[in-house]
Image (tube, rainbow, N blue to C red):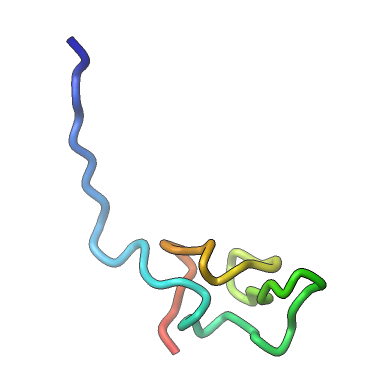
Length: 59
């Protein structure tokens, strides 16, 4: 029988995504339309792909 373990994440450690993040620069996009992250993650991201980013800060 497989053992199941419960994992609890601290409240608020994975919030929001690029669409409402302070670090997302919507004026700086790459050739694929991805948004520049100026937070700790860096690089270009699709807002819909970054659900649960731990660098997220509310605008």
